[in-house]
Image (cartoon, rainbow, N blue to C red; front, side, top):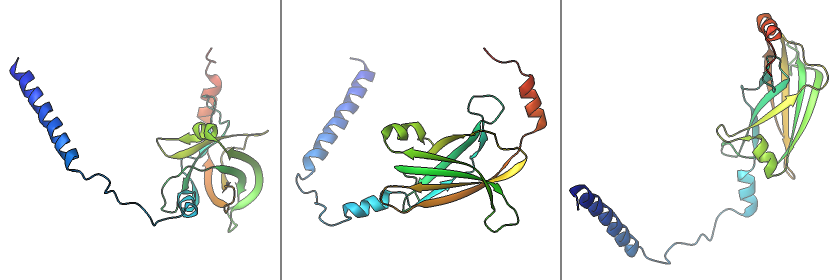
Length: 191
């Protein structure tokens, strides 16, 4: 037996013996029972969305990897009562408006709306982004795309069964450089 094998075996044996002694010293059955605490309704209320937040990553995007935006990529985060990200089950409604600078609400003419239910586990897997703890929605243009070089207002609402409706809004500018469009138009199509 080599010295290295002996040392490794001794260390493993000491760790195993220490673990057995710790477990032997733990009293069994002395774990306190939780007899008081939050009710089921209180837990549901606490771990359900209390607000929604449209994040600054929201902007017009291409969904097919070309240079022309196909719609709006929305990054949205539901927050629980403590302000932590939480998953949501219910219906999201998005509305896009022209931006009116001279108005207190800045909500101009309505342009488009989208309804996106998140009703089951498949929807969660489709829209939930684990790394950022956000929902990612692709809202494709319906009919005519919105004109570039303008400012817009996107509103979002969320309604879960039996709960209050939650709202947020986000202002963004849709800026496209002429050079980018010309370059995209001159690039050959990939097979």
